[in-house]
Image 1 (cartoon, protein in one colour):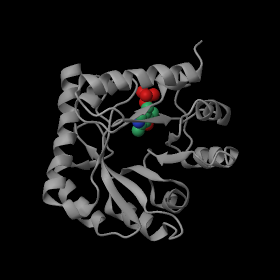
Image 2 (tube, protein in one colour):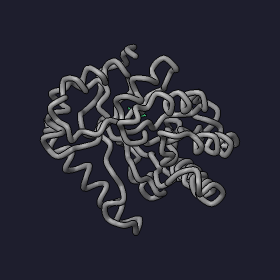
Image 3 (tube, helix red, strand yellow):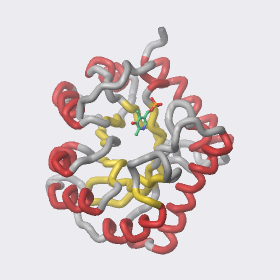
Image 4 (cartoon, protein in one colour):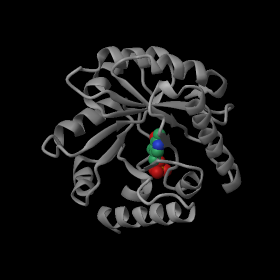
Length: 237
Ligand SMILES: *Cc1c(COP(=O)(O)O)cnc(C)c1O
C-alpha cells in the first residue's frame, strides 16, 4: 500500500501536469484533501506531508477531528457537505470555507453567526449543473439572483462556484459540465463584479481532476486518490 505522503506527491504531480497542459499558471490549482470517514491519524499524516486544506462533509465527524488536531494550527477546514439550518452556527464558528451553500437562508445564517473575531467565511455557491438527478445545488437560472443576495451579506466572501457532476459521464460530457460552471462564474463576474472576488471554481475529484483543471478549476476536491477507497456509506451527519 502506498503511503498518504506518496499519494499527495502523485496527486500533486497530476495537478501540475494538468495545469501545464491547460496552459494555466503554475500554482493556480489548489488541492483540497477530502477527509470524510478518515481518522485523525490519517489527517495528521497528510498534514505532516504538507497538506493544509481539508474538506469534511459531516459536521459532527468534522468537529471531532478539529478537536483531535487542535495542535496543528496551520490546518484550514472546508465544509463541503449538505448544510442544514441547525448546522450553520458550528460551521460559521469553525470553518474557513463553505463550498456547498445553495440557498439564501443558509447563507444568511452563516453570515449572522460568523464570529466577527474571525475573517469573513469564504463561500462557494453549489450549482446543479446536470439538473435531473441531483437534489443539491441551486439551478443555473436561479444563480444570478442568489449571488446578488449573498453578495450583500456581511461576514461572508463570495469566492465562486462549486459543482458535483452526475456520475457516469464520459470525458467529453464532464468537460461540458465543468465548462458550464466556468461560464456561469464568468457571467457573474461580468454582471456582478461587486458581489465578491469570484475567483474560485471548486470542481474535480479523484477521477476527473484533469478535466476540471482543463476547464478552469481552482480547487480540486480529492479523497480516494489520497486516502484510498472509503468504507461503504455511513449515515452520520
Ligand atoms: C467525497 C467527495 C469528494 C471526493 O471524492 P473522491 O472521488 O473520493 O475524490 C469531493 N467532493 C465532495 C463534495 C465529496 O463529497
